[in-house]
Image 1 (tube, rainbow, N blue to C red):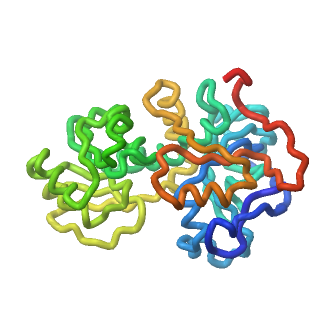
Image 2: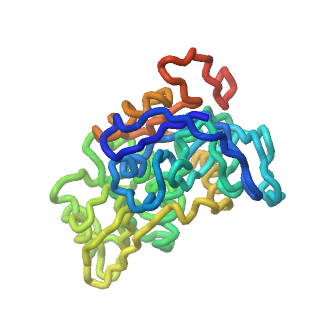
Image 3: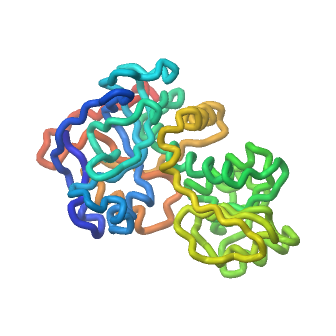
Length: 334
């Protein structure tokens, strides 16, 4: 099979097609023929070497990609019947990528618990767009464990993780305060924001002006760190999505979160799919590119300001390949 991988760390152009052995499922696993894979900031962290420790002792190529949509085409032995996974099923999958095992591949083998049926009527790019970031948001909200009516501040609310935080928090009955750019008001309101503070050096003070004493918790999708802890009340909470080495003091609890721990949380994966079906969560697809254009996809993400997901379509067709009609998971009329 072909995959998009890197053999040295660096800029987007280190990504290129490689040939890898076809994988096959073992007990409790399924193989997914990938139709689409989403680009995420964690992929750029892998590409630039920020996650080099994760692959310590392993030899390249290293394949990025933590969320895919495709079709189950091989099923291993000893699959839990409760998972109801079978060949031919259209699925979305959470990929705990490591070494040459990653979502930017024509095929990927996953634990059966890591896949679930795609949302109703979803195209391949749509189905690949939601699982990792919505799981990141769910992981944060479950760690914070705020009661109904509590006040949550979401930074970076126009982004994918921030948007899902706002949607899930609104659905849970929290009071949602958001920080976003001045041009994103309508988008953020559509996610359920009760109040919007525009990003800038005075954002924390503006939040406290609106919520005297400070918010109960911050979910810091924009990675503001020390610049936002002043918006949290004494004894409140801070959820962070990358290592945070500060000390907010005032009894504020810090939750350092790693979504990979939820890779086989099948009930949560299925719950998030169900929330998409119910219209609670949105599938946000922006640019869709052929897999071989992964360098361009990473350049777009590196440039910043991305609101909707960048998606790669598979299989990998190198420039010399005879292009074939792309297969999708959706009805052709969708």
